[in-house]
Image (cartoon, rainbow, N blue to C red; front, side, top):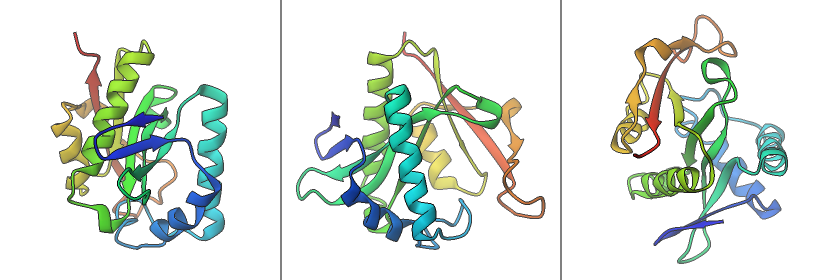
Length: 175
């Protein structure tokens, strides 16, 4: 468990499933990720995170607000795929009511601090689509740098989709 001034970043609980499903059914939250997810698809994502936590000791963890225990979404690090296969990938997704409050940055910075304190990774990576300015803007505010050579077409996205092309960012372990 990781705590910050306002947040708790923690393993998933069964009670997170319903609010996470609601978050994943919000078309605006899913705007740069693909269509809204069914409850079964959302639950499967939680199951994958729980399995990762059990097998490697980290995942995209649940994020809750300390003041009232509200489930905000997720933030964490997991083994990456595609151009960053098995490299540490940081990611976040918060419900729309929690956007613009600095929660994603607070959680992501805490997850990076956790990574540097507990793992010997030389870098942590992140991916998004070019249109998702909020996401890559946060990556840059965290000190991540774009790797133009890491641009790729996502293999799970249809060729005619505006979400096909992705960009990659990276941050180095602090000196």
